[in-house]
Image 1: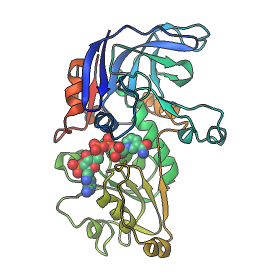
Image 2 (image 1 turned 60 degrees about the vertical axis):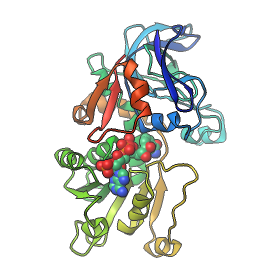
Image 3 (image 1 turned 90 degrees about the horizontal axis):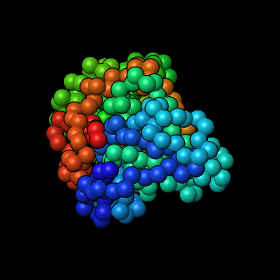
Image 4 (image 1 turned 30 degrees about the horizontal axis):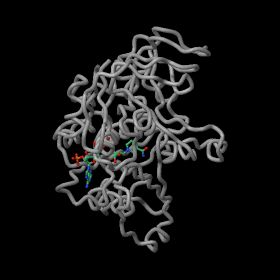
Length: 339
Ligand code: NAP
């Protein structure tokens, strides 16, 4: 079978490899769709640790082709998504119900071979069934959506709240939809690319701010802004220093900031503890998808989210190395590989 493998930092190649054989408790899944995530580019550049060599791809959806011994919950032909993050289940954090913080967390598509291949192995406990008639392209959104749901749980958006989403990539555009579904009456997206702002308005944002040209602080939290005095909740989804600082400025006193975007390890941002203190901000962060993958699958199966508009390109496995090795194209949102 074919697999797009990271063989060393900065080198990804399409290789012919042996089709894996499912062991006890494992499923052999034929991949029908696998999304490309910004993290894949970080791994390509050596900015996240990975096994080497490894087949990348952690946003996968496919059909069960064969099952190993002791598999009781799935049979051949089932459409499944998989939670790529595998926790030990025994450590202090797993026992506290926080598997994303597990002492020995590992992940499919990072330390074990993932979904940029014709087939992959998924442990039964990581798999979640999807309706047979669901588009696999939609199924590939379960992983990023599951991460967003964790962020949303932490944000605790209430009916009538005002929410600012900073960064209009696929995550920001999912968050805009989720914030509206959570009952926010004002949802403003700040991002630089105009087509993303236009799309956000169609997906439920009530306002869009041009992060490149507008005075973002004034436009959102100024006396004549969208939410004078600041918004109830800021979802930082850009992962850059400027939006981190902006988040703290545009949240109202007593408001909530959830840091979701990933800044490069080691990068530091100057903040004023005094400003944080006197605003009594709830400064939170949300990491990965603890126990939210099943909810994400159910939400996608329900069809309540607009996903087709987020898919700007589908590619074959042969294009995966070049796409991951290149900077994201202007106007692109989500690229999905279809083996
Ligand atoms: P993305 O496509 O890179 O989206 C981030 C977008 O932020 C950029 O495309 C850019 O869009 C916008 N941006 C950059 N600078 C900005 C600024 N100064 N003001 C406003 N917007 C700005 O990535 P994504 O896939 O949507 O993911 C978003 C972030 O979440 C990434 O950092 C990703 O690593 C992270 N993430 C975190 C988790 C988690 O568990 N916490 C899970 C998945 C992803 P414009 O060009 O339109 O400005």
